[in-house]
Each structure stands twice: as C-alpha cells, then as structure tokens.
Length: 103
Image (cartoon, rainbow, N blue to C red; front, side):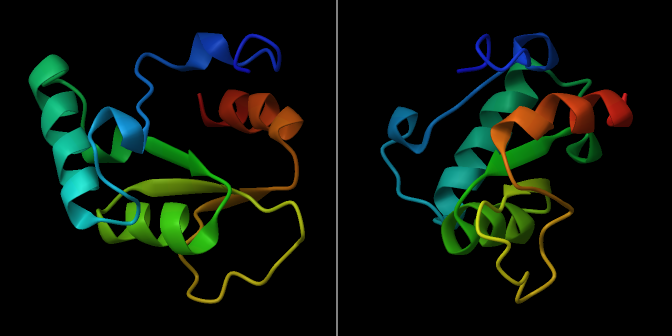
C-alpha cells in the first residue's frame, strides 16, 4: 500500500496492533510501540511521530491519548468530536502531499 500510494519514502517504522497482541485503543499498545521506538531510535522525539489511522475511536483517540500527533483518514467527512485529529484527509492518496508539506 505504501509503494502503491507513493509514500513509502516517508516511513522508517510501521507497526500493527497485531505485532503486539493488543487491541486499539489500548494504552498498553501505544506504550509498547513508543518503548520499542525509543529503544530503536532514541533520537526520535514524541513530536516527530505521526500516527495515521482511519478509525476515530480506536486510532485517533488512542494515539492522541498517548500524546501523538495524528492523521485521520476521514473518508466520510465525519465530525472530529473531541478535536483529537491533528490533520484530516479524505483519501490515502492525499497522504503524500500532507507528508511533503510537513517536511
């Protein structure tokens, strides 16, 4: 999917909840990912991490609660009920332009 959408170059690490045996928005899951990231890349600050997800309650709320900036792939233009989405896009194809604008 990353190569298909021309965004693979923007990612150094990619994790799935399945990699950690936890279900989003479990605080344990986000804590485990952040600990692993800190061990592998101690130079990376929390502000350097961008969590991308398409489900508000599990992806965006969970990542925000963990202190992460978020990109919500909001295909249906739903309301950001809690104001937790740092950025919103409608389609994955918009992700490359967003990531380039953040460099």
